[in-house]
Amino acid sequence: MTSCNDKKPQRPAGGGGRASGPIAVDGFVVSERSISENIEVPGSLLPFEETAIRSEVGGRIVQLNIVEGSVINKGTLLVKLFDEDLQAQLRKLEVQLKIKEKSEERSGELLKIQGISQQDYDLSALDVENLRADIESTKIAISKTEIRAPYTGRAGLRNVSLGAYIAPNDIITVIRQVDKLKLEFSIPEKYAKEISTGYTVSFQVDGGKSYHKAKVIATENSVDQNTRTLKVRALVDEKHPELIPGVFAKVNLELGKNTNALMVPTQSVIPTARNKQVIVIRGDSAVYAVVETGVRDSAFVHVTSGVKVGDTVVTTGLMAIRPDSKIKIARVTNKK
Image (cartoon, rainbow, N blue to C red; front, side, top):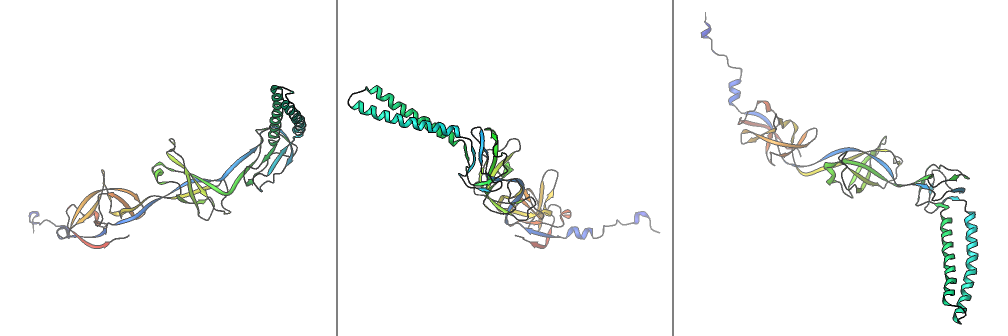
């Protein structure tokens, strides 16, 4: 019979042997890679130009040449207002001008023989100039009764009918230049310096199946203080049935591009209460290195400091490793 004092301490199975030998792990060699951060922001497609057509003066419509939904060329007469009173006034002024011009001509002949004074001739010439100014003013008033297309575009729905009386604040129709479109969207302020004129973006409209391109033509000159975003405007010089003014767009941006980024596998980063660490293999020993990280994807994370090109970081067996543990590399990868 053996007493309790005679029992020898039990050693954990394999504990001593494994602790004294090197730990077999997988490693990853750090190298430079090209990375970027892909973000998606909402946007809207807008006509390149959009103008609400109004009249400068009130009047009754006597001619209406707007075909809803049709393409209208620049300078086409859209609406003609009643102008018979102005036309009659113009004819009257033109007759008066002819009479005054003859009077001025006679006064000029009399002035040559000193039949009248210079003052009398100047008054006759002034009458002619006043009439010419009145005629020009009347012609301008007549031109305001003719409403023409400011540029080539597509007409929207018209809001007036033939014979209707319109006031200056009444919208007759809306013309939109749709042979090219504008894409407007906003980006977070941290990417503001990366977007400039000429930058190409990819987008997809709501419900669309194709991706389209747009080129940045301008950005707002300051960041919005409420949303902390920068407004961007891009040109869509493409014709496609999906591209309709006013539709919602999903804009895909490739920002934060870095061609010399140091990437390590996500599982090699050990989060702690105060920082993040990786285990770097130095010779045959494990060394803990504090790192700072940036962009990450499903498999890798960008390390901004703490490691350098050529370092081998441990990717397996992290929980069993202690500082200065002996390491044996079972497999090394270097995925570029």
